[in-house]
Structure formats: C-alpha cells, structure tokens
Amino acid sequence: MKSGLARHLLKLRVNEIEVNIRVMSTDEEGKPVIQAVRLMASSMEGEWLKTSVYIERPDPVTGVAEEFCVIGGDEEVCVIDPYSSPTIIQTKQAIARRIRSTYAYDFLGLLEVGLIGEWDQHLESLVD
Image (cartoon, rainbow, N blue to C red; front, side):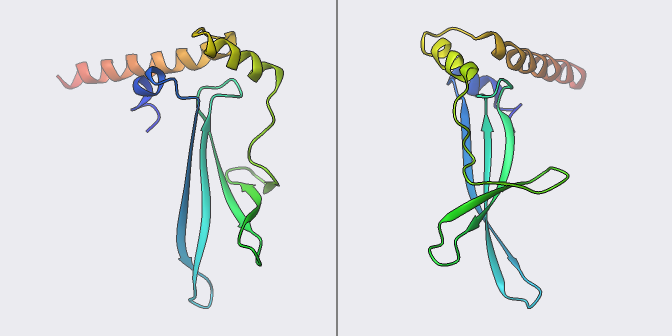
C-alpha cells in the first residue's frame, strides 16, 4: 500500500500515518474477544514511513490502553508509550521540512520511492 501511494504521500508531505483497528476473535471457551491493534508508519527515525504494529493491552478496570506490545520481533517487547521522544536528528528533520527542504537522512527514503516508481514503470512497460 505504501509503494502504491508513495507519490501522493510525498506530494502531501505525509510524515506519519496511524491507524487503530479492532480485531474480533474467540478465546478457548468460544467467547468473543476484541483486540485493539495500532498500525503506525513514521518517517521520524530516518527511514521513510517505517512501519510498526502494536497490540494494545488495556487496563481491565478503565479500558484505557496502558501497555503497547510490538508485533514482529523474536521476543515480545512492550512499552508504555508507542511514541518516542524526538531526537536531535528528528528535530533537525522537522526544521528542514518546515522550510521545504530535505534533511540528509531523508534521502534514503526518497531513493526508495524513486526506485519503486522506476520498477512500476518497468513492469508496466513489460505488460504493454
């Protein structure tokens, strides 16, 4: 999805995308269980729209998410807040974007988008 929308996302200067979904399943006893999942894509760590997925673990009394566990690693890592505090690089990145410029760390993401576009054009030329 990211590669298909790459041109539009760059044109709109999208730095972060977050989608919260609820997944319904059943437990061992057949009772319905609703699990909150947070899908995030962010350019704030240097890589263009790097994706991460968290399972939200709510407080049993209040229902408010108190722990976010990362999906996709060898071992389960849980954090209290899925948003990291800005680093020096992220601050410089934000300043460069505000003045409509590109920070050096963003060039790898731009190269990735360019290569995806080139491959799309090449594959379209093979079909025609």
